[in-house]
Image (cartoon, rainbow, N blue to C red):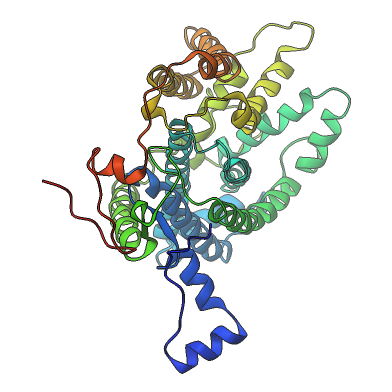
Length: 431
């Protein structure tokens, strides 16, 4: 987004002037993350999670490249190569634990990023494309994480691959050929590992490419803010650097402390003990469960237990994929002109019910497929779809919202009149 009051890039050093004339990379950096990129002055710490997700992606790519140098993608050697990394490679245990827990860190900040977008209406015009590209990143993350979970070739890796790829078999006519093509045979084996290793290595770079598009799409309308009010004057903004580089740096430091605690003190807390047992096609685990970040969708999959027109398994597959694809249509399902949930009292109530509902789905997804968890999954699944298909459209038509502030500055200063100030200079609050 172009702001006439934004600081213009003017290199002073002769070399920088020479470089800028031939390859305007310094100008691009200045306009993207420097003083030439103004942001609303009222962004809270919920706006840190996008940067944290980017940091998590960098961690995953760097650790993944090093781990790939020592991993053997074969049914006979995969499990032992992981043990070799843990025991014999210098700092291999650290790289492996950082990579495994970094995936959980990536999903934690991504889920918080998504829920922040849901609450503050980040999917509304003119940021629909930003929202949809973010969902594409989320889908690519899920595919990458699933394939990565298979690579250690432990019991849960093997049986998780068998169950998840078996879902494609529920698709009429083309399901079984797709399943056979995906795993390279009739059961997970050498061909499956080769395919998944190749894609697991490739997809993070695809994610990085979509992240660039995501950021590019964000720069066109500019960042949203907690009030949902558009930027109207220089008083409403501050430059990205140094204000938000410092803020994001502090948030990254705190987040990395929690990641370090997880890596050094609880490295297997989010994993499954059965994955330290070599894959055995003749021994089925008592309870097959995916990684925790798939639990809400796994609960939706298992919520369908009765054949009705279509087989229950097919209904589960359609609902599981539909629960994510539904989010792509959110900009048109929620037609309220007010973006931020802070000014929508009834929306705020139903938003927190949705958060609890997703938490219930996650809990049920990690439990055995038995009562009362199946019934809870069914109720929570019904509410999940009702929230987006019924509650939001109705709320957007009947809800009486609170009055919006006239500007971001008015909101920050709690209604006090803000004196005009040069760009990047904070006006002093009235006493």
